[in-house]
Image (cartoon, rainbow, N blue to C red):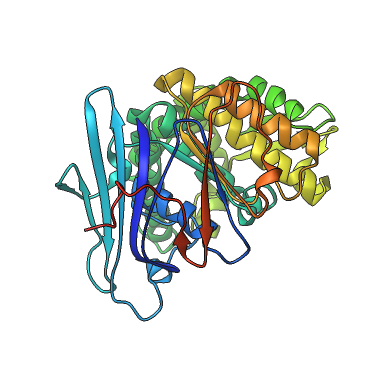
Length: 371
């Protein structure tokens, strides 16, 4: 599915604006503070129903306003489509797909897939393992939407077992613990298998992409599960070995909820030993590699949103990134303060959109403000 345009009303710094997206690379350019990142956020908000920058939806409201709205126009082989997200504080978020109300855009397999690079997302590289686990599970769900149920099943079984561990530590019988151990073991093996298969597909692509954009030192990505079990029976044996210590703690401390995804550079963890520039390249390579793998399973690469990605790249790496985006196909949007930082490359379709002071300067007249 191709995104044709984004239209906003009272979103961040925009009162009402609309911007087209090209079929290949779209460059959003303008001075600092013009609203380029806000427009990227609006695209993500309209495609997913949530912000990529904040967990508090109130932050997306233009100052002094009571409601915000984003509309995404898109098309696929079946025709035109529209996704709309409206937000008013204190009320349920209103989301529609082709005019029909939906509870979650994220659950729709027909919506555009979207990935985003933001400088603040470096926490994905250098932050806590939980961030990388959540990201890995989102990647798994993008590859195989039905397998998102494995992650939910594990989370539910883990919550039930943790609650039971607390009750047993307070004197309740252990009789029902065996049943939840079985449930947790089956869910754990399924979840770990999904993650392992997904990373196995990603690893060679990550190394290739990272090298192409200038991250040397044999970059690698490695899945590190907490458990070494390959069957439910083996996982159950691991749980039994740890039961007493878990009863003392009151929670399950072993299983895929303790896994990690490790990026390695020059034989060392990028999280600990990489410079900020190397970590930025690692994050960019991860998102680009995931995009390429998803394209193999879903027939088209996700739309990728790249905010301020060129500012810390030298001339050769900027060109390498543009060439890679062109080679992989699909849509990409890059923000930059300097249009010259995104070099034209042969065979790469490129469109430009100028932004200044919360205004889209060169949007075509046919794209109206949201209703």
